[in-house]
Length: 152
Image (tube, rainbow, N blue to C red; front, side, top):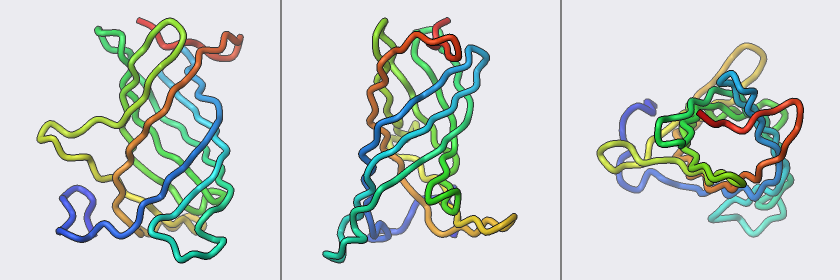
């Protein structure tokens, strides 16, 4: 399986929806960290309680403030205690003085970009899926000594 190319028709089999609250930290030097807690929902489900479960994600990556005062971000997220890693997530944030609206942009050809999802066991990473990440997040600004609002 290769995530650099499109999936054949009908290849999308599941939708994972995360409803999270957490903290996005921008260090003022181009490094980003995210810590989220919430609920993971699997669709279509099996009508079992496992279709809805608590979720925690730890993400890290980089950001760059662009001339139009938007923020370009690239990061990876680990869930399930680090056993599952979503890699190569690319998102763009639109800044105001109080909030940042974050979304995952389409590729230049209008398609959503595929990213690899790995199962991690020790030092072994096994590709288990190619995912389309559709980030839809609102970040409220908090003034704190340990973080910086990403402005040019």
